[in-house]
Figure 1 (cartoon, helix red, strand yellow):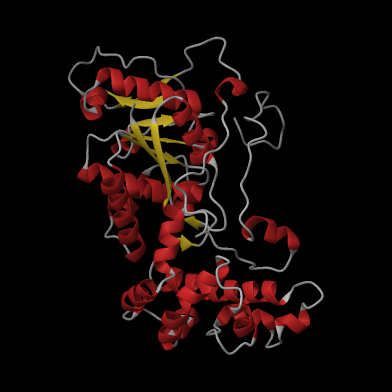
Figure 2 (cartoon, helix red, strand yellow):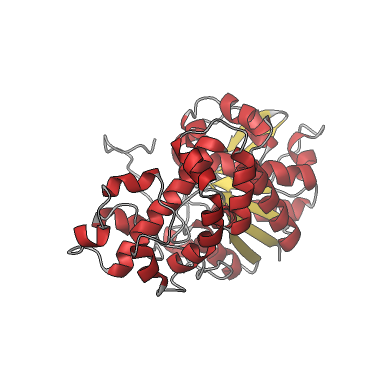
Length: 383
């Protein structure tokens, strides 16, 4: 069996794991492989929202221009350092008694985000909708939003709590902006991403690494992690796939994308990933030699729905079967083993109940369908 590391790159929601790696972990283990998974998005958030993270942010912004969010952070950086780990602990559900101190409005440093409260006690104003505990989560969320604003405006303009570098990936017709950003000197956030990538590589020593790209806000983080891994372990195969690839990269033609990954899969990832594992195992050769080597007549065996770079050009290998298996034949229950489920933390940035569905409470998403194969609705963005 091969050892596979599956990674959710920065940034997605911090209250629950994105389910792609859990489903693939279930499939891989069912197929006899050793699968481990990591949520690098959560790891990055917890590093930034820690005492050490606050001190690093303070160092990174002290010589920069100071908009209101940054100026407030610098004035209160000691308070943030003293409270941030307790606040995260509370939002993780481990210290509910902190709610009373938070709603007192004397515990947290209150920055520009709190202006929306109009200097009123939110518990009194929203008392018919939010409990004391939920009011405390709301205030703690505003506190973290102030920190995110300080990071974005003082350290890294691409950073947001649920996305990173989204605008770079939104321009999907060109790879230029992403390539340029990846080669610039990294910000504090970029350096942390590099460190996390190398730590995961050393910790798990995988035979293959897979990154899920569900949203535009994950693409830069995934490529940044892959870049760090390739520089330290160039022969470790890397696979990418997911919702963003399925909708935005179906016509991928820029070979520079494969400076950071070896395979890009489309649509349901189970069968392409299993085929890639068979391909890597059977060839038992460094992928860079396999993909771009001098033997221009060598054909990779049995790949499916996957992009590769061959002879310095992008090549797409379609499905090899005219009767692909149904979803049920490859489906498996998601396996969340290895993900730190007790470390995800809830946010209530807006009291509106519909907003809370996305960010408050840890809930596991279940796959009810494997997509639509008609692709005829005018509003659908799946080509």
